[in-house]
Image 1: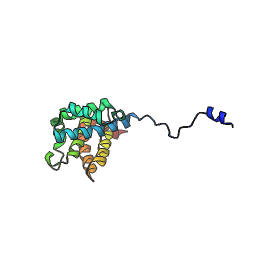
Image 2 (image 1 turned 90 degrees about the vertical axis):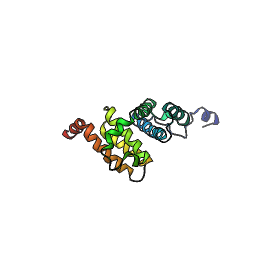
Image 3 (image 1 turned 30 degrees about the horizontal axis):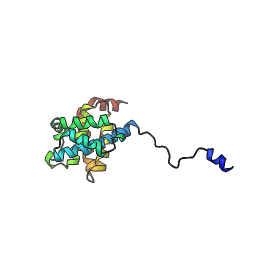
Image 4 (image 1 turned 30 degrees about the vertical axis):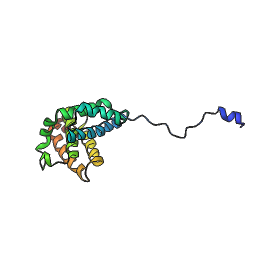
Length: 166
């Protein structure tokens, strides 16, 4: 092939084309960002709208479902007491003794179990366990799993029963 012929050939990209993230991947990223933002709120008590604006500047929120990130951030912080009441009786220690990361994960999981009935309970628990593995202490994922599983038995009784009948 002559030099002229080579120049008209399309160049092959050395990088493979990035696949568009799936909805579940976007939601997982939203949970991860929400965990960090809610943790920041818990530790500093900054205004939620300030934290949300900061995350929009400091993080690439294009890699997450921004609407879901906002729903988690707003929903968990606005309903903190209600969410704490849902799982507090299931704890083997007081809320104040919980690691702030575990507490935040439990709040997110409780929010999804109680408010987002469109998300299967097993997905909520699994996503919370994955957050605990990524951000929590060494064995915190087991603790989070146990608490949210017990909570799901209370909140999602019908869904769990229907799943067992299959």
